[in-house]
Image (cartoon, rainbow, N blue to C red):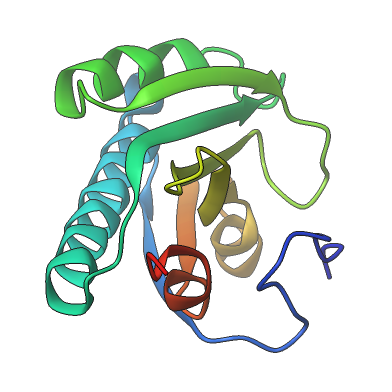
Length: 157
């Protein structure tokens, strides 16, 4: 289990929406890049719909791409693809120091009305499907959004 943040709204038990894509690897991290873009598009639409339906307030979406030598070129490939797909989202890169993820973890979040950044979506690459199928070419991209954080952090009150 990952450590719990001291930031408000986080707990060991929570509500989330989870997405997963599994399939054969493609040249130039094509499977991973395509899956990450699809997941982020869904979360962007979900956040926009929540804002409209419930009066939630946030601004300036941002992404943190965390990668390491397990997928050495994916950060550059994702940065280019993200700039095309989501030009209004700020992107920064950090080193990934984790054995839980296989080379890539992305944090997606928004800033609240006070300007504080809240990372509420976690996207990662895992080797679980490769292990289950005994085929190292198989990939898994999984992600989740902490739904309980939306009203706690962005109620606008």
